[in-house]
Image 1 (cartoon, rainbow, N blue to C red):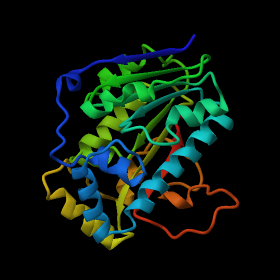
Image 2: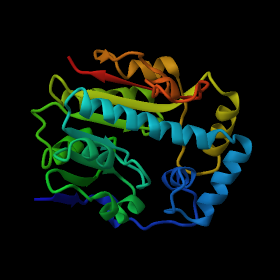
Image 3: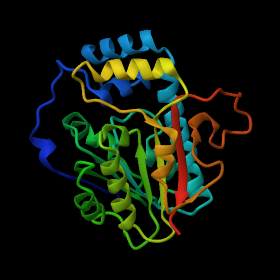
Image 4: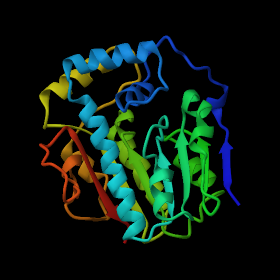
Length: 271
């Protein structure tokens, strides 16, 4: 039986503001999605005029996630995913990639955005053998996230935690690390952590464009030095090649060579 549900939260009471650009909708625009407004397209075009490589960053991030999920299902035998900071559906969403490989896979999406909530039904399409669910919760409340996820996932079994381009929205680095630690504490040995985020030290144009965006009044996103992204994995067993620019993480054998970009990520196992 197909199992899909939405766990409501405070964001369900919020209204969608189409007059202010929003990072999830801009990201959707860069990925080629349609769930955005003219104000998001304008902000996205303004950003890409300063840094045209942002479209490559967005698409390389999604490709990195796809390769992570493929490894987790096909090689690590993971059948459960907790994807926090889901964003708007585009292509190769977590459940689509995972359930193509194993139809019994169960996925819980978490976000705290009224527009994402409005599109939850687009996310909640599962194979009959598996399940998807959507939890309306904020990243800053990991205990609520774990409790709600447990309604769909068996958190006594290894689970993959996905934090894709979400930790940059947590301004305080110590708080971001504490959130990651608490979430992984709630998962058993054999679970995995997948993180990718915008980074500093690789592309000065990207840093300039993001810093300017953060001054516009939109929800800011903070690029972090690579060593800070690496530290999110402390205490875990990083898979080769470690934390690297995302196009360099286990590229397909036939993939064209790519230069490093200002987006770093890795995948690690909880011992």
